Amino acid sequence: MSASKFTNVELLNQLQAAFGEAVLEHNVAYDILNVYVPADKAKEVVLWLKNNETLKLNYLTNIAGVHYPFNQGRELEVIYQLHSMVNNIRLRVKATLPIANPEIETIVDIYAGANWMERETYDFFGIIFKGHPNLKKILNEETQDYFPMRKEYPLEDQTREDKDNRFFGR
Amino acid sequence: MENIRKFNNPVFGATRDTIHGEVATLNLGPTHPATHGIFQNVLQVDGEIILSSEQTVGYIHRAFEKLAERRPFHQITPITDRLNYCSSPINNIGWHLTVEKLIGAEVPKRVDYMRVIVMELARIADHLICTSVIGVDSGALTGFTWVFQLREQIYDLYEEVCGSRLTTNIGRIGGFERDFTPRFHEKLKAFLKTFPKAFEEYDALLSRNRIFMDRTIGAGPISAQRALDYSFTGPNLRAAGVDFDIRVAQPYCSYQDFEFDIPVGSDGDTYDRFMVRQEEIRQSYNIIKQAYENLPEGNYHADLPEFYMPRKEDVYTKMESLIYQFKIVMGETPIPVGEVYHAVEGGNGELGYYLISDGGRTPYRLQMRRPCFIYYQAYPEMITGQTISDAVLTLSSLNVIAGELDA
Image 1 (cartoon, rainbow over the protein chains, first blue to last red):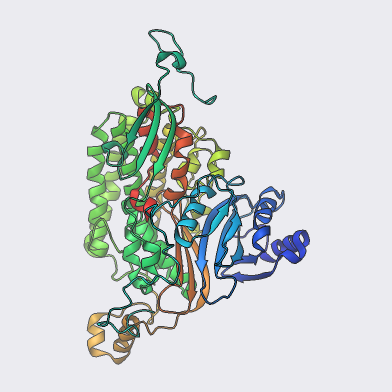
Image 2: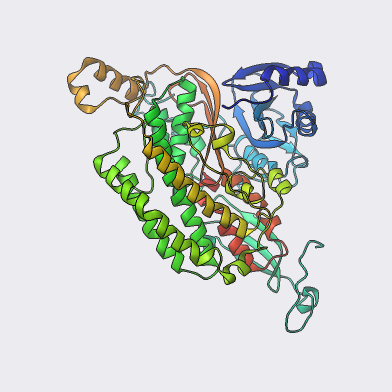
């Protein structure tokens, strides 16, 4: 990766200066800084990063959902990956949600491109983006009443007896 | 409705509001020859003018992200073929690079250069399809048939590297399964020699053609600001005037060693997207030439016994090779825990793999950032107020590939 104008440490310091306690956890994974924020602050953080004149993290690369069934009370995770083309630095903003009530504010009004990314995340993980203009299933059938990327839906039929799972995947 | 282009009828001199004043519903797709793939657009039209559009996608959704959660890393490569199948080598190599980043592999310089050659060939093939299809949709079929010969040469080259043509499954984690063969060298030299002339002939058919220019200039424009807002990448973003290219911003595969330009457009319309891709083909040709002339000596794969499948002869005769073959196939290789994002400049833009590994033999989660999926949502905005024929041109110039759109 060619040199970026900011280091992850500077980025983190700026975030902590602006949001203080709201930056719950942070780590660096393969050059990219991850910050965990409370779900109700995620939108504010993304907006602040977009409008920040020095950081210029004003490009939304992708939104991803992840399901961790064993994290009690924070089973679902939404990941916003942001990118500053000017400063050549990436950042992931993560928010965790309980599976019983997986609701988070939409960021469609900040990034128009978030529209389908959020629909896809809803489609596969059932994360509800409050305020989204058209939160419907996108790649799957609209009548599908479950969220297939959650870990409770294994890819193969678990009643099969001819395969030993110790040898074939998880 | 205020952004609807005032349409002056040359005969009656009337504005569009007075021609019909009646709204009709028109299905463009899902299986329409002009959509070049399976996606549906329900258009509301007033005469020829599009008032609004609603998209339906997902017709060839194959659940790649779910499939990937049950496959070991080397078995995910064939899935990536089927994303943007016009340039599958870029997808394959992008995936290999992601895994290499996760395991911290160092690959020899020769592998980098070989990959650059293959990826740039793929980019040429991808862009040739796109630009010639713009020609087809504006009524010029000749260019399309002409460039298929060039694409055929590129497919022959893939065949020499990996044995297959469309869904290539090219390379391995750590490099390639074999070095470039003598026939590959022969064919690449022939390609490098004949390509510029054939390509310029094709370019002369369209790029300064008056009819083509009249048809494409102003069709389906998008401003740089909106394009960024919609997370555009690749040629479509560059056509709108933003000079961003992953190959330069975050070089992978030693792209920093090569001298090349990043063409940018100004209006983000169909003509700009066409011209940007045409120029990128020339730049890709230059990169291939530089990479081939300076192809370093060395091994064609990294020393990664736990990931790189040993040669079959060695499996039968050498104990280590047998052990590693067994470990790879049975998924006994230790895999680091971590999350990694790696992006490559695909045919349509930033193709990123976001891989979360929990140390198991398969990814815990693999998200593919598919550029088509992200920029296709801007399509209704781009065609509102345009004519139906412009909408078809806009679709082909965006180069929406159904495989990448639906994953």
